[in-house]
Image 1 (tube, rainbow, N blue to C red):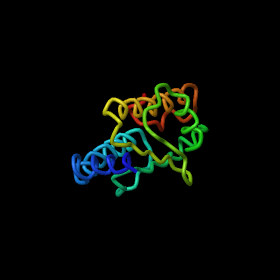
Image 2 (image 1 turned 135 degrees about the vertical axis):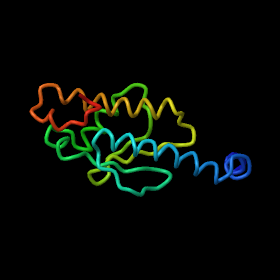
Image 3 (image 1 turned 180 degrees about the vertical axis):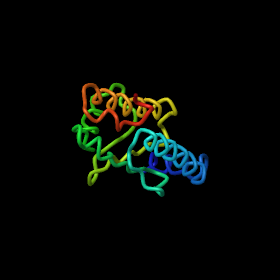
Length: 132
């Protein structure tokens, strides 16, 4: 119990809930914005703690379902941020300990996965300009 008490004291007393939520919201908002630019469907509102992004139709057409993207991200080293497939979406859950560099690594990994699949695909004309 002393470790739990210490952890809660750190979060509630030293860091503060508002700071924690603000930092997580900044990160999930940055992820949502970048995912939109890559062509993912992103709900206009999301939790401060996680964001769900949905592969666009052209991604599905070239074999990049949410499950396949998560599979490819799982092989990315170092693992940037916790990502899981949930109901056809990528659930991206940054935590307080994740750095801005780790968020950037995640976004570069998504871009690389999309870019690698576009090689030789007939749907390259529908890719976001950022990937061409």
